[in-house]
Image (cartoon, rainbow, N blue to C red):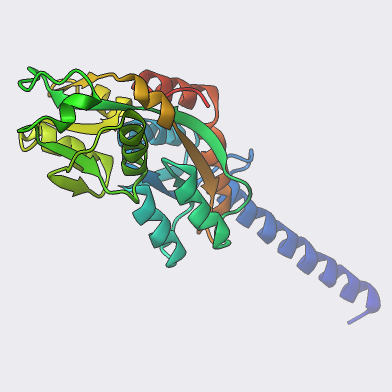
Length: 259
């Protein structure tokens, strides 16, 4: 083989290799830089309805993408991520649980706050116990559900109860806000401290009682792509979409506050 032929063959091999790398990049992020493929999102339970809608809209805006949600209490999700669960994105209901992930070195970049949320008292639609504020939760015969202390809604509940000087013993401590709300919907308790957004999503079954002390414990919701994400480009694209105007509109309609 002549030197000229050898040089030509090498050039062809290098061109094919470069084309192969480009094809792989397009598969991961789309020819226009948008996310494609499967994106697994670990999201706080209070984000369930909003992220289902946002996930569908993300798929529509990013052809070839599919969003899978894993919703639970933020503390449980953080533990799963730190134990190696395959996930692309983490959206927490409080910075403390996000810090558990970032301090373990499992975040890709700095988390961004994308929404805020505030507690209300969820009661049955007819409010049979006549609950009008936090003090009523400590009355004899009033059964209350709270989130566990390690869950963001539980930590917030403890903050507002302490601020109001209200001491009570809940009949149940739930592992996420949906669990606490379910106890009200099922008639197993008379009230629960949950987020405004959860009451709005369940307005056919419950009503929300506002109380001034809730301003003492407004939760910031941070989101971040994860370091070992199976789909890094899809993770970054989803995080960017959550911060975009269409997704922020979805969150506002659900009752979330702007960051």
